[in-house]
Amino acid sequence: MEERIKKIRAALTEAGEAAIILSDNNRLYLSGFKSSAGIILVTRTSAYLIVDFRYGEAAKKSVEHLDVIVYDNLSRTLTPLIKKHRVKKVYFENDGVTLKQADRFKKLLKESDVKASFTTYLDNVINNMRIIKSKDEIKKIEKAQRITEEAYLEVLNYLKPGVKERDIALELEYLMRKKGAGGISFDLITITGKNTSRPHGVPGDNKIKSGDFFTMDIGALFDGYHSDMTRTVAIGQVSELQEKIYNIVLSAQLAALKSIKPGVTCGFVDKTARDIIDSEGYADAFGHSTGHGVGLDIHESPTVTVNNSRILSAGMVITCEPGIYLPDKFGVRIEDMVLVTEKGIKNFTKVPKELLIL
Image 1 (cartoon, rainbow, N blue to C red):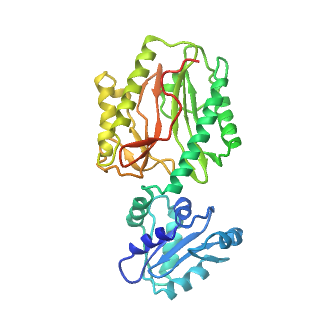
Image 2: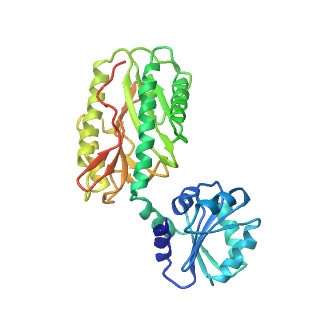
């Protein structure tokens, strides 16, 4: 954690510069302390975690690399620190900060004749840190994935004609929490029949029927870190078209996984999957990116899309999730989550992906 603060401090290249971190996940990343409110102030010589009474005792006991201050009035706490460190310019995150927050801090700092900068500068500094996962982060992501898979394997027993989509979502969340998840990574996608042609279909009262595909895009939270996995299974039987589409998506996913290694671009991985789907005549049926980064956020850098020239490096965690979606018919998506290693990948996703007919 202390090294992360040092990197923030190194980005403050001019005298009088400071950074204030507002977002929950970036605050967690830099402090190791989870809270729904508070700020981190980093100057060129000091760093503070500033929280309210609700978090004061816990923060003081668990955070050692930051000076913890408990405030009852943020302005009365922050203003003396700004003056003490002769701050003249403060960088803020641009992504995820509300207009209300921005206006509040602009007014607060203006009273001390300090400039508030809401550019992407601080976002880029933090994102370039977060994009490479530490060993501890990797362990947490892998644990989240193990919880997800255990719940998935159990819920397969519930997939049968007559069961509602929303009931499968509820059962999955229950199983994940029972197995140690702190929550779900996102609103679970558990959809069947024609609903599977919608990449982000919402589970409802649709009932499973024999001959349906059933898609589960699911993930668990463990100690703040996400997992992400998609499997499409068949109920009872499949048509020739269903089997054909499934195998095209599987071929595209396997090829894309094989292409992932340090030194290649995100765009190359996306193109590898997309070329296979395009060659089969389904270019218009694959409209989303092939993957995305995963960590404290379910979607973070890098984005694995055709126009992204970002080069993959060891330590990145990304998904690989091509799909084909045929409106009013069905859709297929297969998603694994992998760690980029020095030699290729470590696939966190262990459950089979060959076509499963229940």
